Image (cartoon, rainbow over all chains, first blue to last red; front, side, top):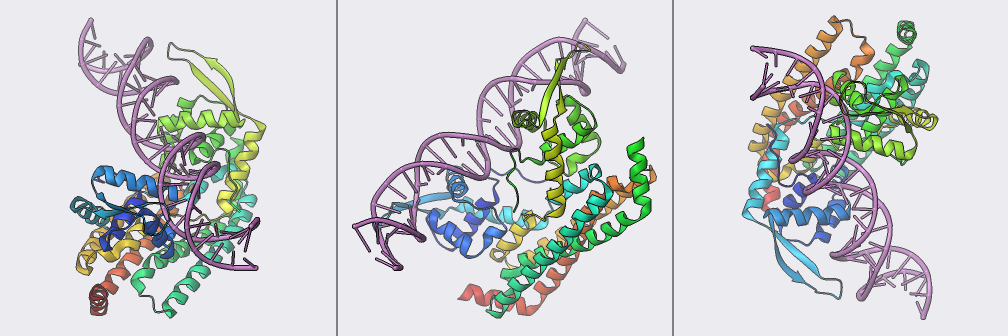
Length: 196
Length: 196
DNA sequence: GGGGTCATGTAATAGGTTACATGATTCT
DNA sequence: AGAATCATGTAACCTATTACATGACCCC
């Protein structure tokens, strides 16, 4: 049910979204992405940005509007959103909001292969993860509080709160996991498996 | 602090992990990946597999052991884990367990751009996500229960439980978000923002 | 014995990241 | 005036995915 997009990179969605406001040149797009810290949710690097912009132009979602050279800096090509682009933006964003997608979190990989490590080693490693997780959660909370104090509306912080919610859940999960693996039953089972 | 690996694709880690058991040819690796349903946690397709195997061989983590043709099927090249490969496996897997990595979940992208949608539309979309999430959670629970009934050890189900934990947290988050956006304050603020 | 599908792999293409290049401004 | 850093983009290089190819086995 997930539509195959002509341009699939999330960075492209951000480009469309920013161009709703006004036409811009790629560098400016990049600047705003970083300034608004959206690069925390969307993988950003300049190379990909220019690539994505080219793809969007080819797909007809944005169009070259003019090429200016106001100061003596390199020429900058200003792009504007097309009607198709606007449609694509709403369609894509709606899908992303409405339909959960299968994710491949790094820790999932780790968990699925964890059996190759010994139980006590695993417990040790999970311990350091646990404290790291606590640290990240704190950091996000701090970031959100600071922004709120600055008067930033909560809509602009909602993804950070989402992140915190996920990390929180993971923290609880890891804590429980550690408990379970400390139990002698687990160790015994593990040894039996190796024996067979 | 996250080490830059010679081969970074998680699929490669799975290959190393399976080769700990015994030497195998790529097709067999693929078969086991699917059979053990690890392709739910690790993106798998045959093309990538052969690529990754080549990369691992070049990096010296696995070595071509023999080329057999037992039945009249195409030749199969059997690979074995090298000492360096074993080291890399433990090192990499340990890192993955101990250190949380920054993730870019699809929904995070959606949330960070959500402002471009109208509040009531957003609430509607979030509603359908909510039910979809509930469905997925059920499906996973079912899957875990069925496997447990079959006598599968819980270590082999731990990633599914992780997945469920995350989805659960997201479910709660979305439910709260819907509540918040239904509140007239939010709508007013949103309209003010557009006005400015 | 002809039609599916299993087993196995390669090649073509598209997608993304890193590295490089270059003039402008700003700082000391 | 030289060093650092900003602004801007292109090109080279990897990585990953899709499409193609081909013989064997299995079913009716």
